Amino acid sequence: MILKTPSFYKDFKCIAGACPDSCCQGWEVDADSQSLEYYKTLSGEIRKRIDSVLDKDEFGNTIFRLADKKRCPFLNDENLCDMHIAIGGEHTPYTCRMFPRFINDFGGTREMGVSFSCPVASDMMWNLKEPMSFVSELNDLPPQLNEIDAQTYFFLTKAREKAFKIVQNRSVSVSERLVNLLDYGVEIQKELDDYPEPDDDIDFFEVFNNPELINPEWTEKVNNRKIKPVSNEVYNENIASYFIFRYMLNAVDDYDVLSKIKMAVIGVLVVTYFGEDSWTIHLWSKETEHSQYNMDRYKKLLKTAKCLSVDSLKKRLTL
Image (tube, rainbow, N blue to C red; front, side, top):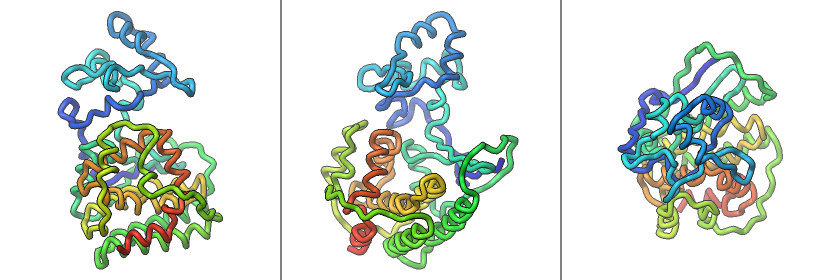
């Protein structure tokens, strides 16, 4: 299998207890089946602690019941994981082992990156000075079985290459690049499938009032917004590049590439309006990308909200 990652991917290191916004609080953690089978082989105090906090969510998934202030029940006073200390990081739940990494499999190619939801990863991407680039290497993993259409996949890989060139073209302003990206998104969407006319009159800023709130600081960011033009800064290029890499090829499954393009533009508008720093995009990512409920709502609004239409977004880019 070919593994493709951002060039900085291997530089990421978790800072554990020194993290300013621990990933071990704010959201529930699924207890995956493989980990649960291992926990059955344990004994002693750690087994009792694990059994005492296992629960079911509304979807029937096994989860670890959170403690006060939405903290993981294994997060100690030094913001370190007692489970990791007791049985090793390799036996913590899959979600814990992987965070903040994401994986997209496309048959013989696996793409991996890190999410803005981690403050350390957010800082890394925010502070890149060179255009975001990627490396590919062969590994021993077998190709993943899939039902994707090969022709569509190769069409999208070529389209993504052009999308990167558009957003990384520093001879024009970031705003112009994003307008050009939206126009390109409309063009390639026509090659894939019809795109519905939006009919939801939701206000633009109401889009960001997520039903499931993880960190109240995000609500403060939204309430204290400032509408202004997009800055011609490298961090905005990096944000757009992140969304293109993470989401664009997923259109091979739903034939909706335009919504993925919109995500790149809206990501830039998030920091423009709510705070031009890596913390703001970190909060947005934690609130949205790592809440299934919020993400499902957001994906729907990308297609149905008039305020997120191509024309509406282009108006915001040309203030």
